[in-house]
Length: 80
Image (cartoon, rainbow, N blue to C red; front, top):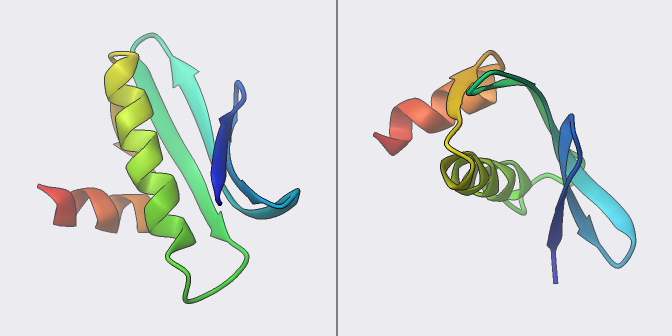
């Protein structure tokens, strides 16, 4: 089972103690700026899982997402 963890600068996808991917972000005021999305195993949808979690987490904390990374930008433009 893939678990998500959040630090002050990252959202990590972890399975069996192995890092599958992460999102690097910054927080300023009510904005979450997504800088990079990394998926270390292709074909598993890790990037999408990370973005789904990031959107959910941002909504829970009343953050507006500012996508700098191309993957986040593409995901969010598709999501609307």
